Length: 397
Image 1 (tube, one colour):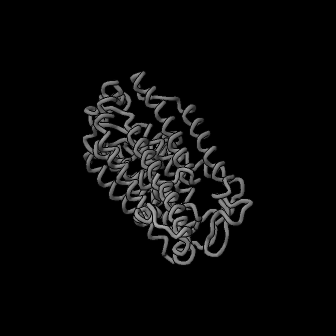
Image 2 (cartoon, one colour):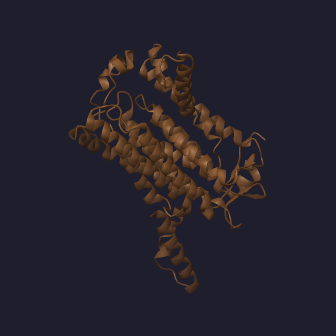
Image 3 (spheres, helix red, strand yellow):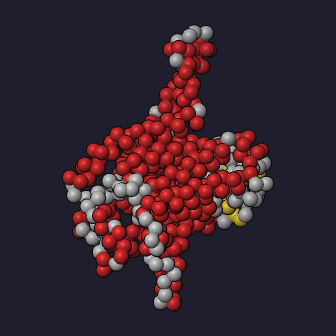
């Protein structure tokens, strides 16, 4: 809305100048502020935070009244962990609707929702959130921790990720295929969306062609599931989401600035990508707002509604900024959590032995004697360090 208000003001201001008159556009020349991405991104962050904090108590009361409590795995399933998390029984889940609602409201108000980068990230987030909602609803309805079957969930994740990846590949404003005036620029060279880049190298590492579609699909699915695995302790996934989204909002802003991207940092530049910073800052604000209620001891859990949505949005944002590989560093905590599960399952199947006391890895430290709040805060600190290190790589050469 703010973006369109600026566009209307700009046209009226130019018309008044052409006619030699001074109407309302000259009176309200402060509306020129709406042109700046930094201003709208800050407003989006504050708005998403405010909406989340203001509406949060009502959402929590509604979830409680609907008896949408989080099913906790039994002692037979998780043994000692059931004792540590026994007090969480009955805490309402599906709180991810609060994050989704806050982000979408702030995006509609502050960003240009028709921007292709904003549209694909927002739609992917919404679709993954809907899938997570169905999973959560099945859990609370049946009073089990299983939810949708693994195959069913993977199928829908694959379909969502494939649609998002295809949109990115075929949308000329993003990909640059068939239109040299669009797409990305790396230094002085025009590159297409199939070019895989990394900040340490000032030219593409490889061009994947159409194979980039399954590659992007894998990133979105992987990130969505990684955030889902991280969401096991109060505020853990939320805090890591804030640092990752903030880092990528900075990357989106820098990538949208021609001089900074092409001459100074030599990172992929696209004239439309800067608007994505508004969406990502809305996610940061919504994360802070949700953390208000989700910090230990949590009054509400985001559930798969939030974790799958956040992961889908972050994965799509990493692809959109052409910093897919950097997600391994900036989202280091998510990678650790996912890899711990892969290694644990692989080791048990091959050697009949476990590497960790329990996976995901945050439970390993819990069972090792760390208090839940210690695990959460230490992982937050690592997430901040990963994000800073990832951003530092931009100007290493």
